[in-house]
Image (cartoon, rainbow, N blue to C red; front, side, top):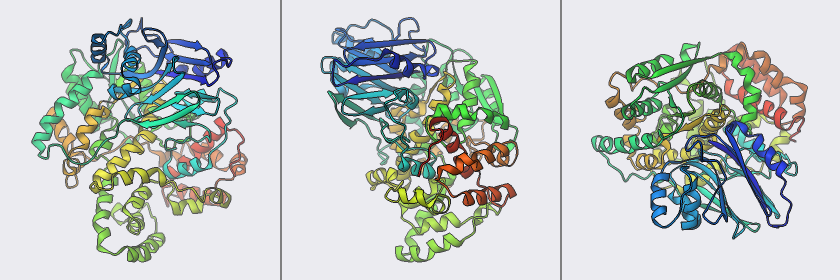
Amino acid sequence: MCGIAGFAFVDAGHPVDRELLDRMTGVMRHRGPDAGGVHLGPGVGLGHRRLSIIDVAGGDQPIYGEDRTCAVILNGEIYNFKELERELSARGHVFKTRSDTESIVHAYEEWGVDCVKRLRGMFAFVLWDDSRRRLLLARDRAGKKPLYYHADGERLVFASEIKGLLQDQSIKRRLSLESLSDYFSFGNIPSPSTVFQSIYQIPPAHFLVWERGRSSLHEYWDVDFRPTGPSRPEEALEAFAPIFDEAVRVRMVADVPLGAFLSGGIDSSAVVASMARQSDRPLVTTSVGFAERTHSELEHARLVAQAVGSQHHEVLVRPNAVEDLPRLVWHLDQPFADSSALPTYYVSKAAREQVTVALSGDGGDEIFAGYDRRYGVHRLESRLRPLLPEPVRRAVLTPLGRIYPRADWIPRPLRWKLVLLNLGQSFERAYFNDLSIFREYEKQSICSPEFLAETRHHDPFDAFARHFERGRDMDPLSRVLYVDFKTWLHNDILVKVDRMSMACSLEVRSPLLDHKVVEFAAALPPELKYRGAVSKFLLKRHLAGRLPSLDVNRRKQGFSIPLGAWLRGELRDMARDLLFSAQTAHRGYVRPEAVKRMWDEHQTGWRDHAHHIWALMVLELWLREYLVGAKAC
């Protein structure tokens, strides 16, 4: 894995600031501690930081085409580079390295911008074509690798991380209030926007062509969740195994030590079981857990490690680990409220002590329907909604949901507040509501009148609407899986994995997000993903065949931390400072009295506001790190 950065000017005579380029790449040294390289030309500069994985001795970047008019820098891995090399060599191209990066520049020489469609892997790359004064910026299909940019009438500036762009002092740190509103809803900033007004990200499965000051964005791939694949479990299992094993196998190619994350869950266990079948040496696996047994899967991970005979390593996360939180917020670049970033960082840190590359199970939930509560409750609501006319639902159920108590201490089957609110809304709005950290009625009570007035014309639901519209003729489960794949996956899961692993200079590869695996899973009928009350039905059947001793039907635990208890204990003082300092009050996004009421309810145990409190804590930490004394309203 690597970090890339650079810029190009419309005016070829514009001075190139080498010191700026060095600062842009230097601030991302964690992404590539092994080597650095630059390309400087008339009005253009490309910079690269390298984490050496393949062709350690000869793969330094940039890498050039035959006549040196094209230069490419890559963050990621191209898994089909051997096949591309054979095909392109037969067409007369001359390869000078064993690096996967070189396949990109020759593919561009052969097929132009359509070369992106030929690549299989996780990647964000930038290619400079000097003959056209053209930049090509491209990102992989799932969005595993990040790529941000700023463009004005004179130039385009890009970097793997926002902090790289911010080394250019002419790019102003102007906060986007609309993105902040999105953060209150989602706990992250949906692409293509960022928290800054003039910085954007290339969306997954897109490439951007910038040529002499004009840019155009193109989508080159999409996934179709309409069922066209095998409908019988036996047929699907037989077809899935070789596709999945091949996706794992191509990700085991490396010239450095390689291992795997092992949570004990279905996805990582399936990956590790496949690796064990295809490796002639013991695997290295790493797990993370907590002292609180209710949030720890270490015991289950040990069982899998014993079954495959791996060299297993464990790390225990304690509340004082959050002393590292300011640094992790810096690595994340934007406000990010998913607290599982913490264990992701610590498992990455522990794995890096043993290996340079780790395979993970990320993506299984999004393509095989693994979020039990989310999909199960939504299916229930979808069955109930047609029983009452929409006007009745809106007039009766929505008000009832607003007055129904939110009592987190009562048994889960009696917590009907959210279900009642959702039944009063459309299918799409209900799903958006279910995913929100601060739901719309909660934002009305927690956000300040000034902030609400400034963002009154912005609807965070718009981040979902386009994808719901694309999937309008899909069945309900396929529709929400498609929306999750296009939003939650890359805005949350893959941000967390990339930033936390790269903070440790560790490359993480995700076989379940190979586009061939994704396309196969998407084409399965919904009943092979969620059958009865069983989520990830097909993947569990597959794993049961590989590891018969594993209980594949135990309740999903997830990668969560015991946040509620920590905020009443060891993290209490830190949280209180972040929520109630004079600096926080000055900003003006939230009502202090509403935050105080929420805090008191959490401390007494009346309600569990852990995720709300964490989101506000992280936001304040980010503001102190990136904007210092900024006032939003």
